[in-house]
Length: 102
Length: 364
Image 1 (cartoon, each protein chain N blue to C red):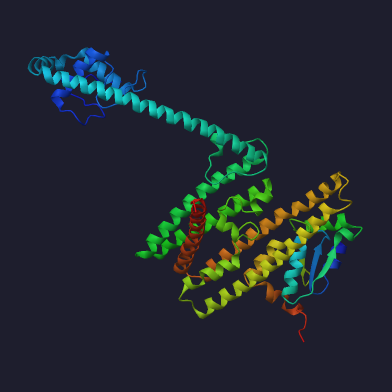
Image 2 (cartoon, rainbow over the protein chains, first blue to last red):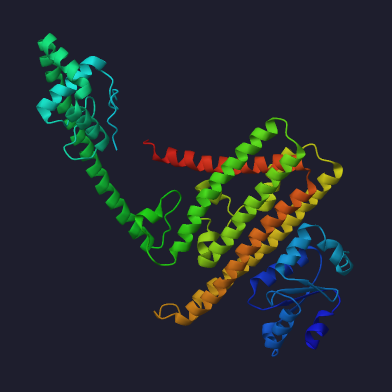
């Protein structure tokens, strides 16, 4: 749990994913489209994968991956991100973390 | 049960004969054919038309009300009697011929039906889902997992019927005067109807995700525009936009933002799908092709395919949210117009499919 907290409190957008998870990939693509470079943790490459999964579920995620954190706060999974984006609320949320465009 | 009333009850196919002669004629035909003849109807030696028969027998055996008429006809018009008898025989003969032709037709149809059933069975075994109007329950279906899909197709048939009804209602109501309250409830129902379809699709995807992905229940023109098992939300916004006029500046801005967000979400999902296809192809092609054994590849590929269900659900979630947002941005009246336009758009696509299919069938 601590590890998850530590990993998720990275500044900006943090995505917990698995290397095989294509939906997580889709979420990454979306954030990149919005000018954000998310930090992606592929938990299947982590030795403590099981524990991380359990911790994420306990935090309220229906599926362990993808789990999206913005500014240290859990947003949810793909559903929540999509809903936020369509309602226009995602962009303001990630605005402080958008890569500076030259 | 036939009532033996004293008043005259005409047989169903009575057209040609005058009432008085008709009664006389019945009495004669009983003498000739043993009480089985009803003027104008098909002669059936078995008991297939009980109503006519009991009608006749009651008139024949009881006969009391007609005795008076019988005597009158017989004594007064002997020629007419003969002519009537001849006509009866002729009519009877024609009836028998008609019946023979009808039975022949039935036999041919029955054979055709058996043949079609066999073809359908064969097709099902090959993995094709045969739907869109075919009553699969009557014909029987194979007991692999198709029963849930067959149920879905029947449910979808009802869904389309209800959809068409709602569209007609919206059309009628919008052409006249309608209160905002009434319109609001129509809009709510229309939205709920779409959400119901998404739930149906989600259940079907768990049973057969390929079926849902390929839009197998849709008509051909609808399938042409398919994006992950359904319509593309951003395309839809483009089609509907002109029907919302007049829009306030704020509304216009909101809708443009919605369109852009939709596009971005669609692109993200599309790229995710591409990656899935890529990894699936990798799994299937892994190892040495040509050895003839590939169970580990199948196991791996099956795991990859699980992800397809979540993509289908995400695509429907996007459609759901797009409709939801449009509802939020638009006024009730604009939403009603939009839903009517949307409904008719799909109706037109379905009509296009029918027209196209009919065109293909015409001989060149």
